[in-house]
Image (tube, rainbow, N blue to C red; front, top):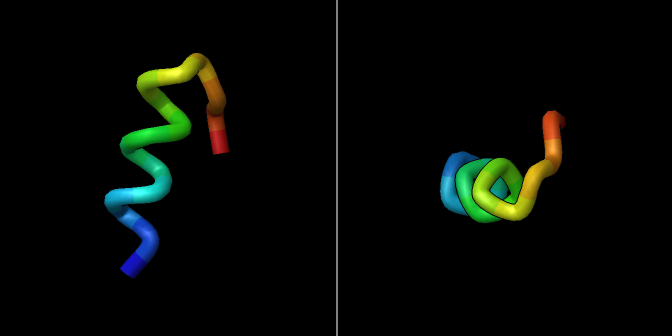
Length: 16
């Protein structure tokens, strides 16, 4: 259930 967090980080430029 961390898809929302991952999407937010991806938009910032993170690649988790």
